[in-house]
Length: 470
Image (tube, rainbow, N blue to C red; front, top):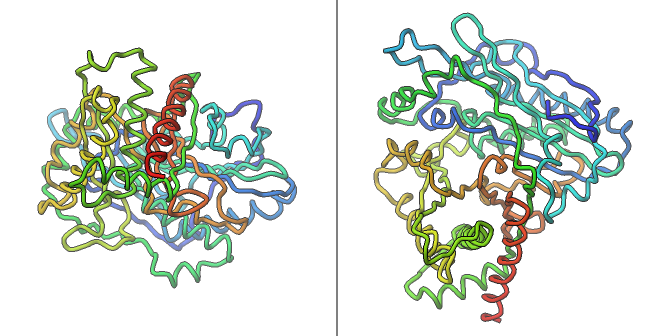
Protein backbone atom coordinates (compact mmCIF):
# COMPACT_ATOMS: atom_id res chain seq x y z
CA UNK A 1 0.00 0.00 0.00
CA UNK A 2 0.99 3.64 -0.23
CA UNK A 3 2.70 5.48 2.57
CA UNK A 4 -0.01 6.44 5.07
CA UNK A 5 -0.42 9.74 6.90
CA UNK A 6 -3.07 11.82 8.63
CA UNK A 7 -4.64 12.80 5.29
CA UNK A 8 -5.40 9.24 4.14
CA UNK A 9 -7.86 6.65 5.44
CA UNK A 10 -7.94 3.14 4.02
CA UNK A 11 -11.45 2.10 2.99
CA UNK A 12 -10.66 -1.42 1.81
CA UNK A 13 -7.68 -3.60 0.95
CA UNK A 14 -8.25 -6.57 -1.33
CA UNK A 15 -6.55 -8.80 -3.86
CA UNK A 16 -7.62 -9.18 -7.48
CA UNK A 17 -6.96 -12.18 -9.72
CA UNK A 18 -8.07 -13.07 -13.21
CA UNK A 19 -11.33 -15.07 -13.17
CA UNK A 20 -10.69 -18.69 -12.09
CA UNK A 21 -9.41 -21.10 -14.74
CA UNK A 22 -9.03 -18.43 -17.44
CA UNK A 23 -5.23 -18.17 -17.63
CA UNK A 24 -3.66 -21.40 -16.39
CA UNK A 25 0.03 -21.71 -15.60
CA UNK A 26 1.90 -19.19 -17.75
CA UNK A 27 5.42 -17.82 -17.87
CA UNK A 28 6.97 -15.03 -19.90
CA UNK A 29 10.73 -15.11 -20.54
CA UNK A 30 12.54 -11.81 -20.10
CA UNK A 31 14.55 -10.45 -23.00
CA UNK A 32 17.67 -8.29 -22.79
CA UNK A 33 15.38 -5.28 -23.14
CA UNK A 34 13.56 -6.33 -19.95
CA UNK A 35 16.66 -7.40 -18.01
CA UNK A 36 18.19 -3.95 -18.31
CA UNK A 37 15.45 -2.63 -16.01
CA UNK A 38 15.88 -5.22 -13.23
CA UNK A 39 17.57 -2.76 -10.87
CA UNK A 40 15.59 0.31 -11.92
CA UNK A 41 13.12 2.06 -9.68
CA UNK A 42 9.42 1.23 -10.20
CA UNK A 43 7.14 3.31 -12.38
CA UNK A 44 4.55 5.32 -10.43
CA UNK A 45 1.61 6.91 -12.26
CA UNK A 46 -1.27 9.01 -10.97
CA UNK A 47 -4.47 9.88 -12.84
CA UNK A 48 -6.82 12.52 -11.41
CA UNK A 49 -10.51 12.34 -12.39
CA UNK A 50 -13.28 14.70 -11.41
CA UNK A 51 -15.95 12.81 -9.44
CA UNK A 52 -18.48 15.09 -7.67
CA UNK A 53 -20.05 12.29 -5.65
CA UNK A 54 -20.10 11.08 -2.07
CA UNK A 55 -17.99 8.41 -0.43
CA UNK A 56 -21.07 6.18 -0.08
CA UNK A 57 -21.73 6.43 -3.83
CA UNK A 58 -18.06 5.58 -4.46
CA UNK A 59 -18.29 2.49 -2.24
CA UNK A 60 -21.58 1.31 -3.74
CA UNK A 61 -20.78 1.81 -7.43
CA UNK A 62 -17.13 2.48 -8.21
CA UNK A 63 -15.48 -0.12 -6.01
CA UNK A 64 -17.48 -3.15 -7.32
CA UNK A 65 -17.06 -2.01 -10.93
CA UNK A 66 -13.30 -1.49 -10.67
CA UNK A 67 -12.78 -4.84 -8.96
CA UNK A 68 -14.75 -6.72 -11.60
CA UNK A 69 -13.30 -4.89 -14.60
CA UNK A 70 -9.72 -5.21 -13.32
CA UNK A 71 -10.17 -8.96 -12.89
CA UNK A 72 -11.39 -9.31 -16.49
CA UNK A 73 -8.52 -7.12 -17.70
CA UNK A 74 -5.93 -9.28 -15.92
CA UNK A 75 -7.31 -12.29 -17.77
CA UNK A 76 -5.96 -10.75 -20.98
CA UNK A 77 -2.83 -9.20 -19.39
CA UNK A 78 -1.77 -12.07 -17.14
CA UNK A 79 1.82 -10.85 -16.51
CA UNK A 80 0.49 -7.93 -14.44
CA UNK A 81 -1.02 -10.40 -11.96
CA UNK A 82 2.07 -12.62 -11.94
CA UNK A 83 5.42 -12.27 -10.22
CA UNK A 84 9.01 -11.71 -11.22
CA UNK A 85 10.87 -14.96 -10.53
CA UNK A 86 14.57 -14.61 -9.70
CA UNK A 87 16.83 -17.65 -9.38
CA UNK A 88 20.08 -18.07 -7.43
CA UNK A 89 23.37 -18.88 -9.11
CA UNK A 90 24.16 -22.62 -8.68
CA UNK A 91 27.62 -21.62 -7.42
CA UNK A 92 29.73 -18.43 -7.36
CA UNK A 93 31.36 -19.14 -10.71
CA UNK A 94 28.11 -19.76 -12.61
CA UNK A 95 25.55 -17.34 -13.95
CA UNK A 96 22.07 -17.48 -12.43
CA UNK A 97 19.22 -18.72 -14.57
CA UNK A 98 17.54 -15.90 -16.45
CA UNK A 99 14.61 -14.39 -14.51
CA UNK A 100 11.08 -14.72 -15.84
CA UNK A 101 7.57 -13.47 -15.16
CA UNK A 102 5.35 -16.30 -13.99
CA UNK A 103 1.63 -16.58 -13.36
CA UNK A 104 0.30 -19.41 -11.22
CA UNK A 105 -3.43 -20.00 -10.72
CA UNK A 106 -4.56 -17.81 -7.84
CA UNK A 107 -1.83 -15.19 -8.15
CA UNK A 108 -3.19 -11.73 -7.47
CA UNK A 109 -2.36 -8.05 -7.20
CA UNK A 110 -2.85 -5.74 -4.24
CA UNK A 111 -5.71 -3.27 -4.75
CA UNK A 112 -6.33 -0.57 -2.14
CA UNK A 113 -9.29 1.80 -1.87
CA UNK A 114 -8.79 4.89 0.27
CA UNK A 115 -10.17 8.30 1.16
CA UNK A 116 -8.08 11.48 1.18
CA UNK A 117 -8.75 14.84 2.82
CA UNK A 118 -6.19 16.84 0.81
CA UNK A 119 -7.32 19.52 -1.65
CA UNK A 120 -8.08 17.71 -4.92
CA UNK A 121 -7.95 20.91 -6.99
CA UNK A 122 -4.54 21.76 -5.59
CA UNK A 123 -3.11 18.33 -6.41
CA UNK A 124 -4.36 18.37 -10.00
CA UNK A 125 -2.96 21.82 -10.70
CA UNK A 126 0.07 22.81 -12.76
CA UNK A 127 1.66 25.05 -10.11
CA UNK A 128 4.48 23.95 -7.81
CA UNK A 129 3.26 21.50 -5.16
CA UNK A 130 5.23 19.58 -2.52
CA UNK A 131 6.24 16.18 -3.90
CA UNK A 132 5.51 14.29 -0.71
CA UNK A 133 1.84 15.33 -0.83
CA UNK A 134 1.36 12.81 -3.63
CA UNK A 135 3.03 9.81 -2.00
CA UNK A 136 0.02 8.63 0.06
CA UNK A 137 -1.84 8.22 -3.25
CA UNK A 138 0.78 5.95 -4.79
CA UNK A 139 0.81 2.19 -4.06
CA UNK A 140 4.12 0.56 -3.25
CA UNK A 141 5.20 -2.87 -4.44
CA UNK A 142 5.02 -5.64 -1.87
CA UNK A 143 8.14 -7.34 -0.56
CA UNK A 144 9.69 -10.44 -2.07
CA UNK A 145 9.17 -13.96 -0.73
CA UNK A 146 11.45 -16.98 -1.04
CA UNK A 147 9.81 -20.09 -2.42
CA UNK A 148 11.98 -23.23 -2.58
CA UNK A 149 14.74 -22.36 -5.07
CA UNK A 150 13.60 -18.93 -6.27
CA UNK A 151 12.48 -15.52 -5.07
CA UNK A 152 9.01 -14.27 -6.01
CA UNK A 153 8.78 -10.50 -6.50
CA UNK A 154 5.38 -8.75 -6.90
CA UNK A 155 5.41 -6.43 -9.90
CA UNK A 156 2.13 -4.49 -9.98
CA UNK A 157 -0.18 -2.75 -7.52
CA UNK A 158 -3.09 -0.31 -7.70
CA UNK A 159 -4.65 2.26 -5.36
CA UNK A 160 -7.90 4.13 -5.94
CA UNK A 161 -8.47 7.15 -3.69
CA UNK A 162 -11.62 9.22 -3.39
CA UNK A 163 -11.71 12.89 -2.50
CA UNK A 164 -15.39 13.06 -1.48
CA UNK A 165 -17.52 15.26 -3.73
CA UNK A 166 -14.42 16.28 -5.71
CA UNK A 167 -12.51 13.56 -7.48
CA UNK A 168 -10.76 10.22 -7.73
CA UNK A 169 -7.04 9.51 -8.02
CA UNK A 170 -5.90 6.23 -9.52
CA UNK A 171 -2.33 5.32 -8.65
CA UNK A 172 -0.45 2.50 -10.35
CA UNK A 173 2.99 1.09 -9.66
CA UNK A 174 4.81 -1.51 -11.72
CA UNK A 175 8.28 -3.01 -11.81
CA UNK A 176 9.94 -1.76 -15.00
CA UNK A 177 10.92 -5.28 -16.11
CA UNK A 178 7.21 -5.92 -16.60
CA UNK A 179 6.63 -3.47 -19.42
CA UNK A 180 7.36 -0.17 -21.05
CA UNK A 181 4.90 2.69 -21.50
CA UNK A 182 3.21 1.12 -24.53
CA UNK A 183 2.23 -2.11 -22.76
CA UNK A 184 1.09 -0.20 -19.65
CA UNK A 185 -1.09 1.97 -21.85
CA UNK A 186 -2.58 -1.10 -23.55
CA UNK A 187 -3.56 -2.50 -20.14
CA UNK A 188 -5.16 0.80 -19.15
CA UNK A 189 -7.04 1.09 -22.45
CA UNK A 190 -8.46 -2.37 -21.84
CA UNK A 191 -9.33 -1.69 -18.19
CA UNK A 192 -11.05 1.62 -18.89
CA UNK A 193 -13.04 0.12 -21.77
CA UNK A 194 -14.20 -2.84 -19.67
CA UNK A 195 -15.06 -0.59 -16.71
CA UNK A 196 -16.98 1.86 -18.89
CA UNK A 197 -18.99 -0.65 -20.91
CA UNK A 198 -19.22 -3.54 -18.45
CA UNK A 199 -17.79 -6.09 -20.88
CA UNK A 200 -14.59 -6.91 -22.75
CA UNK A 201 -16.38 -7.29 -26.11
CA UNK A 202 -15.32 -3.88 -27.42
CA UNK A 203 -11.73 -4.47 -26.32
CA UNK A 204 -11.65 -7.88 -28.03
CA UNK A 205 -12.89 -6.44 -31.34
CA UNK A 206 -10.22 -3.74 -31.35
CA UNK A 207 -7.24 -5.98 -32.22
CA UNK A 208 -5.58 -4.92 -28.97
CA UNK A 209 -4.77 -8.29 -27.42
CA UNK A 210 -1.17 -8.38 -26.19
CA UNK A 211 1.39 -10.24 -28.31
CA UNK A 212 3.48 -12.40 -25.98
CA UNK A 213 5.75 -14.28 -28.40
CA UNK A 214 9.43 -13.59 -27.79
CA UNK A 215 10.50 -13.04 -31.39
CA UNK A 216 13.23 -10.40 -30.97
CA UNK A 217 16.54 -11.89 -32.09
CA UNK A 218 19.74 -10.77 -30.40
CA UNK A 219 23.03 -12.33 -29.23
CA UNK A 220 22.92 -14.39 -26.01
CA UNK A 221 25.94 -12.40 -24.89
CA UNK A 222 23.68 -9.45 -24.10
CA UNK A 223 21.72 -11.49 -21.54
CA UNK A 224 24.99 -12.78 -20.10
CA UNK A 225 26.33 -9.23 -19.82
CA UNK A 226 23.43 -8.32 -17.53
CA UNK A 227 23.56 -11.48 -15.44
CA UNK A 228 27.31 -11.12 -14.84
CA UNK A 229 26.98 -7.76 -13.11
CA UNK A 230 27.35 -8.07 -9.30
CA UNK A 231 24.00 -6.37 -8.48
CA UNK A 232 22.20 -8.81 -10.77
CA UNK A 233 24.04 -11.83 -9.37
CA UNK A 234 23.04 -10.95 -5.81
CA UNK A 235 19.46 -9.93 -6.57
CA UNK A 236 18.22 -13.29 -5.26
CA UNK A 237 19.59 -12.48 -1.79
CA UNK A 238 19.43 -8.69 -1.69
CA UNK A 239 16.22 -7.56 -3.40
CA UNK A 240 14.34 -4.86 -1.50
CA UNK A 241 11.39 -2.85 -2.89
CA UNK A 242 12.19 0.79 -3.60
CA UNK A 243 10.76 3.31 -1.16
CA UNK A 244 9.31 6.49 -2.60
CA UNK A 245 11.02 9.35 -0.77
CA UNK A 246 12.34 12.71 -1.90
CA UNK A 247 14.21 15.71 -0.59
CA UNK A 248 12.02 17.54 1.91
CA UNK A 249 11.91 20.74 -0.16
CA UNK A 250 11.27 19.13 -3.53
CA UNK A 251 8.26 20.27 -5.57
CA UNK A 252 6.64 19.23 -8.84
CA UNK A 253 5.15 21.49 -11.47
CA UNK A 254 3.79 21.21 -15.00
CA UNK A 255 4.70 23.41 -17.97
CA UNK A 256 2.73 23.38 -21.22
CA UNK A 257 4.01 24.31 -24.66
CA UNK A 258 0.99 25.00 -26.86
CA UNK A 259 0.92 24.22 -30.56
CA UNK A 260 1.08 27.95 -31.31
CA UNK A 261 4.18 28.36 -29.14
CA UNK A 262 5.81 25.29 -30.67
CA UNK A 263 5.24 26.68 -34.17
CA UNK A 264 6.79 30.02 -33.19
CA UNK A 265 9.80 28.26 -31.66
CA UNK A 266 10.25 26.24 -34.86
CA UNK A 267 10.04 29.40 -36.94
CA UNK A 268 12.68 31.06 -34.75
CA UNK A 269 14.95 28.01 -34.97
CA UNK A 270 14.85 28.00 -38.76
CA UNK A 271 16.40 31.47 -38.68
CA UNK A 272 19.11 30.39 -36.22
CA UNK A 273 19.79 27.07 -37.98
CA UNK A 274 19.27 27.70 -41.66
CA UNK A 275 20.42 24.19 -42.62
CA UNK A 276 17.79 22.66 -40.36
CA UNK A 277 15.25 20.89 -42.57
CA UNK A 278 13.04 19.43 -39.87
CA UNK A 279 12.71 19.35 -36.10
CA UNK A 280 10.06 17.37 -34.26
CA UNK A 281 7.95 18.95 -31.55
CA UNK A 282 9.37 16.39 -29.11
CA UNK A 283 12.98 17.32 -29.90
CA UNK A 284 12.23 21.02 -29.77
CA UNK A 285 10.30 20.84 -26.50
CA UNK A 286 12.81 18.60 -24.73
CA UNK A 287 15.75 20.74 -25.86
CA UNK A 288 14.04 23.88 -24.60
CA UNK A 289 13.23 22.34 -21.20
CA UNK A 290 16.73 20.83 -20.90
CA UNK A 291 18.45 24.15 -21.57
CA UNK A 292 16.21 25.92 -19.04
CA UNK A 293 16.98 23.25 -16.42
CA UNK A 294 20.71 23.75 -17.03
CA UNK A 295 20.38 27.52 -16.61
CA UNK A 296 18.41 27.08 -13.38
CA UNK A 297 20.93 24.56 -12.03
CA UNK A 298 23.84 26.94 -12.65
CA UNK A 299 22.09 29.68 -10.71
CA UNK A 300 20.87 27.32 -7.99
CA UNK A 301 24.35 25.86 -7.43
CA UNK A 302 26.13 29.20 -7.84
CA UNK A 303 28.29 28.08 -10.75
CA UNK A 304 30.08 30.26 -13.25
CA UNK A 305 29.64 29.08 -16.79
CA UNK A 306 33.07 30.09 -18.09
CA UNK A 307 34.78 28.04 -15.35
CA UNK A 308 32.77 24.87 -15.85
CA UNK A 309 34.13 21.96 -17.87
CA UNK A 310 31.70 19.24 -16.86
CA UNK A 311 29.26 17.66 -19.29
CA UNK A 312 25.69 16.56 -18.88
CA UNK A 313 23.41 14.22 -20.73
CA UNK A 314 19.92 13.97 -22.06
CA UNK A 315 18.50 10.44 -22.29
CA UNK A 316 15.30 9.47 -24.05
CA UNK A 317 14.13 6.10 -25.29
CA UNK A 318 12.91 5.03 -28.72
CA UNK A 319 10.13 2.50 -29.23
CA UNK A 320 11.49 -0.07 -31.68
CA UNK A 321 8.37 -2.15 -32.30
CA UNK A 322 7.66 -0.75 -35.75
CA UNK A 323 11.37 -0.32 -36.52
CA UNK A 324 12.44 -3.94 -36.06
CA UNK A 325 13.16 -6.12 -39.08
CA UNK A 326 10.62 -7.58 -39.46
CA UNK A 327 8.43 -5.15 -37.51
CA UNK A 328 6.77 -6.29 -34.29
CA UNK A 329 3.07 -5.78 -33.61
CA UNK A 330 2.31 -2.58 -31.71
CA UNK A 331 0.81 -4.83 -29.04
CA UNK A 332 4.11 -6.66 -28.38
CA UNK A 333 4.12 -7.04 -24.60
CA UNK A 334 7.10 -6.08 -22.48
CA UNK A 335 9.95 -3.67 -23.00
CA UNK A 336 10.96 -2.85 -26.55
CA UNK A 337 12.74 0.47 -26.17
CA UNK A 338 16.35 1.49 -26.57
CA UNK A 339 18.10 4.53 -25.09
CA UNK A 340 19.35 7.51 -27.04
CA UNK A 341 22.14 9.54 -25.38
CA UNK A 342 22.99 13.19 -26.05
CA UNK A 343 25.99 14.77 -24.29
CA UNK A 344 26.87 18.45 -24.15
CA UNK A 345 29.16 20.77 -22.20
CA UNK A 346 27.23 22.15 -19.23
CA UNK A 347 28.38 25.73 -19.75
CA UNK A 348 27.28 25.68 -23.40
CA UNK A 349 23.89 24.23 -22.48
CA UNK A 350 23.37 26.92 -19.85
CA UNK A 351 24.58 29.69 -22.16
CA UNK A 352 22.87 31.88 -24.73
CA UNK A 353 23.15 29.20 -27.42
CA UNK A 354 22.06 26.36 -25.16
CA UNK A 355 18.62 25.83 -26.69
CA UNK A 356 19.89 25.98 -30.27
CA UNK A 357 22.78 23.61 -29.54
CA UNK A 358 20.53 21.20 -27.68
CA UNK A 359 18.08 21.08 -30.60
CA UNK A 360 20.91 20.28 -33.00
CA UNK A 361 22.44 17.55 -30.85
CA UNK A 362 19.26 15.88 -29.60
CA UNK A 363 17.82 15.84 -33.12
CA UNK A 364 21.06 14.45 -34.54
CA UNK A 365 21.38 11.61 -32.03
CA UNK A 366 17.74 10.58 -32.44
CA UNK A 367 18.03 10.58 -36.26
CA UNK A 368 21.28 8.62 -36.22
CA UNK A 369 19.88 6.07 -33.78
CA UNK A 370 16.66 5.51 -35.71
CA UNK A 371 18.29 5.35 -39.14
CA UNK A 372 21.16 3.06 -38.17
CA UNK A 373 20.97 -0.12 -40.24
CA UNK A 374 22.05 -2.21 -37.25
CA UNK A 375 18.94 -1.00 -35.45
CA UNK A 376 18.50 -0.86 -31.72
CA UNK A 377 21.22 -3.45 -31.07
CA UNK A 378 24.02 -1.16 -32.19
CA UNK A 379 26.14 -0.38 -29.14
CA UNK A 380 23.70 -2.29 -26.92
CA UNK A 381 26.60 -3.71 -24.95
CA UNK A 382 27.47 -0.16 -23.82
CA UNK A 383 23.99 0.85 -22.62
CA UNK A 384 24.37 -0.16 -18.98
CA UNK A 385 27.78 1.50 -18.63
CA UNK A 386 26.37 4.71 -20.11
CA UNK A 387 23.29 4.64 -17.91
CA UNK A 388 25.40 4.30 -14.77
CA UNK A 389 27.78 7.15 -15.66
CA UNK A 390 28.05 9.71 -12.86
CA UNK A 391 27.23 12.86 -14.81
CA UNK A 392 24.27 15.23 -14.47
CA UNK A 393 21.52 13.60 -16.51
CA UNK A 394 18.02 14.57 -17.52
CA UNK A 395 16.00 11.55 -18.54
CA UNK A 396 12.57 11.40 -20.15
CA UNK A 397 9.59 9.47 -18.84
CA UNK A 398 6.56 9.15 -21.09
CA UNK A 399 5.92 9.93 -24.71
CA UNK A 400 3.48 12.21 -26.57
CA UNK A 401 2.75 9.28 -28.89
CA UNK A 402 0.59 7.81 -26.13
CA UNK A 403 -2.42 9.88 -25.10
CA UNK A 404 -2.67 9.42 -21.34
CA UNK A 405 -5.67 11.76 -21.33
CA UNK A 406 -7.72 9.34 -23.43
CA UNK A 407 -8.46 6.92 -20.57
CA UNK A 408 -12.10 7.08 -19.44
CA UNK A 409 -13.46 4.70 -16.78
CA UNK A 410 -16.93 6.16 -17.25
CA UNK A 411 -16.42 9.37 -15.25
CA UNK A 412 -14.88 11.34 -18.11
CA UNK A 413 -11.26 11.71 -19.14
CA UNK A 414 -8.49 12.52 -16.65
CA UNK A 415 -8.09 16.13 -15.59
CA UNK A 416 -4.43 15.63 -14.74
CA UNK A 417 -1.73 13.00 -15.12
CA UNK A 418 1.43 12.84 -13.03
CA UNK A 419 4.50 10.61 -13.38
CA UNK A 420 5.47 10.40 -9.72
CA UNK A 421 8.55 8.26 -10.41
CA UNK A 422 10.46 11.24 -11.82
CA UNK A 423 11.05 12.10 -8.15
CA UNK A 424 13.71 9.37 -7.96
CA UNK A 425 16.15 11.49 -9.94
CA UNK A 426 16.34 14.44 -12.29
CA UNK A 427 13.95 13.29 -14.97
CA UNK A 428 11.12 15.01 -16.77
CA UNK A 429 7.82 13.61 -17.96
CA UNK A 430 6.62 14.38 -21.49
CA UNK A 431 3.04 13.80 -22.59
CA UNK A 432 0.31 15.36 -24.64
CA UNK A 433 -1.64 18.01 -22.78
CA UNK A 434 -5.02 17.60 -21.17
CA UNK A 435 -6.33 20.49 -23.29
CA UNK A 436 -5.07 19.36 -26.70
CA UNK A 437 -3.19 16.40 -28.14
CA UNK A 438 -1.14 18.92 -30.14
CA UNK A 439 0.22 20.64 -27.03
CA UNK A 440 3.11 19.18 -25.02
CA UNK A 441 2.99 18.84 -21.25
CA UNK A 442 6.25 18.67 -19.29
CA UNK A 443 6.37 17.55 -15.66
CA UNK A 444 9.36 18.53 -13.52
CA UNK A 445 10.45 17.65 -9.99
CA UNK A 446 13.08 19.99 -8.51
CA UNK A 447 14.13 21.61 -5.24
CA UNK A 448 11.73 24.48 -4.54
CA UNK A 449 14.29 27.25 -5.06
CA UNK A 450 15.49 25.73 -8.33
CA UNK A 451 11.88 25.34 -9.49
CA UNK A 452 11.34 29.07 -8.89
CA UNK A 453 14.44 29.81 -10.96
CA UNK A 454 13.37 27.41 -13.70
CA UNK A 455 9.87 28.89 -13.89
CA UNK A 456 11.28 32.40 -14.27
CA UNK A 457 13.84 31.34 -16.89
CA UNK A 458 11.26 29.30 -18.81
CA UNK A 459 8.90 32.27 -19.00
CA UNK A 460 11.62 34.75 -19.94
CA UNK A 461 13.19 32.56 -22.63
CA UNK A 462 9.82 31.72 -24.14
CA UNK A 463 8.67 35.34 -24.13
CA UNK A 464 11.93 36.53 -25.67
CA UNK A 465 11.74 34.08 -28.58
CA UNK A 466 8.00 34.40 -29.16
CA UNK A 467 8.14 38.22 -29.13
CA UNK A 468 10.76 38.13 -31.89
CA UNK A 469 8.44 36.11 -34.11
CA UNK A 470 5.17 37.98 -33.55
